[in-house]
Image 1: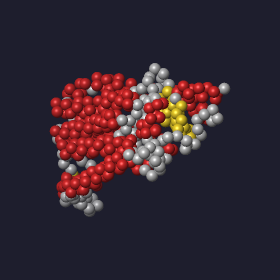
Image 2: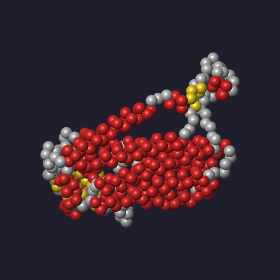
Image 3: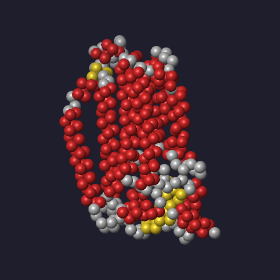
Image 4: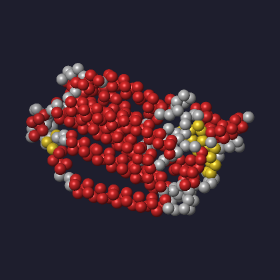
Length: 406
């Protein structure tokens, strides 16, 4: 079977952009609901379920979509690179280099390698945050210098679109990310302002990738590149183009030409979009109304402190905070928890420990500079219905660790 599809860059870019916009808006609704609804034994499963739409955590649907966009861009770079190589273009290796870079970025998006690098860098006492930005910023500068001549030789439309894509993606990944982190520190936790900024950050990155894919597809169309994928030519009795119409293969079979574009048009896409859109709007209206009702429930009414502490801390802390859960409650009578706290103090400047009344374990929060203090964390827990807990700030943790080691 011979498959054919005519590329429409504008339509593809519009669809990808609408998906990115939807995921950003869905993430904002999910984050608002998670932070407005007190966690309890009856609704924590719902909160964890809608958390898969969050753009502020790893291993979520927006992360998966970004990884797909990065991988798709890498594949398009490979197609263009092979075409430029066939023309013996002097910049063909630059295209291959871009393919390798975006392949790595897609892996990093899914595996969060940058977070590992950030943790390693932030072990340095002089570094107080933004560990991975410290590594990426000079790399971006070096990349810009190496690819400057390559960028200038491109057609003006392609060059302008690539610059726009880079500004959106790098601006979201570096600039807006720093603003989002600072807003979290100023607010002492998650607020509406920090949610908006964090959503804009990820939306900029996704839209930057969409613009990039549109630019590459438009370049392929402008250059009149045509790509075919078919079985080895040895299988054909004659020219593959003739075989695509009616010429039988060597084994007596035929390969009819299938126009994928016409086949896709036969799908009732407009009606499907209306139905799915109505369902999504209805679901989000229900979530928002449910969050409004649940947020009005008095603090502590039917709430499970254990579940609340887990969920609240997971959602309220910043991405640069190391979270460790230990067996047994932190204190001088639990040497193991003291050892863990001591190990964290040897790496990080700030270590805070939370013991909840219903928990037989402790939650340790560590960072070079925690984006909240003991009082703001206590206020956050209390506002979400957790009433029985003890928070050890860094001096208290250090004192208990020293006492346990004696």
